[in-house]
Length: 147
Image (tube, rainbow, N blue to C red; front, top):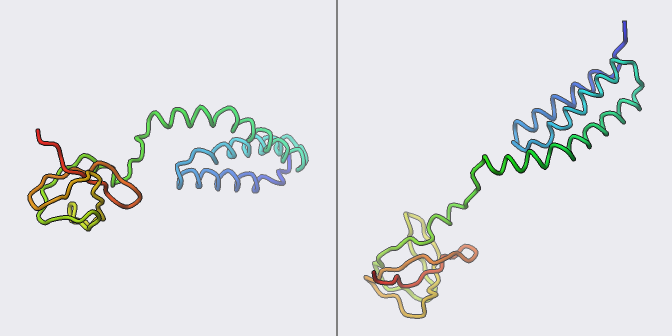
């Protein structure tokens, strides 16, 4: 019977790396699990701990170099891109309920935002404005063109 001396170490590495991948959805640490499976095989075949470490490192690095670019490329195709919540406001038009200064506070969908008038003309009560962009945490607004 072959004595498997470092089996617990390689199983621990595999379980931790899979757990981290499940928690982060990064698909990076699963490649270390592949390396640990090969290290378990080396341990089972009776190779020493130094050979097991070399096998683990080599297989993990090769797995990373071969599979990671492929996984990331395909993952970007299947996962929707992250769009910050503020971006959904660009192009939104509103009717002003009061006159606005060049830089002022304005409630947009229940949240107060700092708005900066980039249109050059004063914004008066009753004007229709449009959110043209975002600069830091400020909405850039201008008078909407009449259609």
